[in-house]
Length: 407
Image (tube, rainbow, N blue to C red; front, side):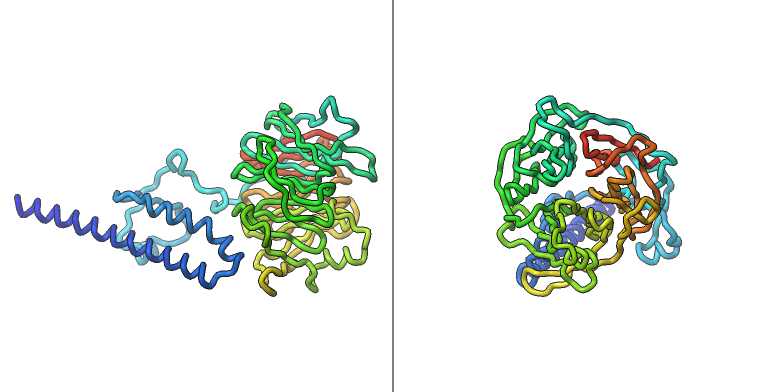
């Protein structure tokens, strides 16, 4: 009995030793990668890998010395294939536990669109003290608030130069007054980024409305978005400025002046191009950049694998485009405005003058119309996906509508 107990204890000690040794090797590997990144990585490489690496080190630092239960979602691999990789495997079929459901981005099934999208909520962003008709040009949403940019349009002689903040139910909280605000983006760290043509910069506030700083002096008005890594992208017709809140002085500049960019070629033929009618977003599934150009009636999808030309100047290359012909038929657009993507990679376009929302797949192929004029939609200009995965649409003159579009 004593011998059996001794063997058990030795086995437990050896098992604990093996786990600690593996943890040590993993930690050393992460440290070596960090050192290699600092020594040989570019500024962009460091920005991209820093946050995941820090999170990895924090997780390893808190690793408990207890065995973990491993589960997986069955795919096409055979039992023999599993055993070749993992050794002897016992598979038990059971539903996922609460909170352990499969990540939708990794799901094997294709999401199913509702035959008809449902407008599940709406409110008016018009306020009693507005001086004139609204002109919504930007929209952003977080867990707490909906941020609506009510800009001033000189050619239409309307708008109120206010970024209005509402609860997600539509109750007005406060506003931020800037000269000709254009677009807005909100970070998970509680910062609000507003591009302002009148201020000539990106103005940063807290989500509570307190001013923080201004950054990136702009020669023209620009659209803005945040990547899934939390980096900021600001777009005009010639460049995309890519930076974090801690690297404002040295943003990566992505040139759009390469030979295959139809967007830049068309803009060069139109010197009076109005750049505040462009919108930008990033597809979180493949990291491609999506840009809409209002007066070109076109959506461009650009590569995210940026080719380095020098320390700060890079080029993005056009992969696909949708539209390019002004019209109301399938494959045509008329004055497209806001764009956004969901967690499945679907691309949504506010086809303003056609009074409809166009849905594309991640490769830019037409899927369907989410809502049209027949659904009461009028001049959609700005889009966002809310935390519940629903599509939120802002109409130019003040209505903000939320659509459930997937089953």
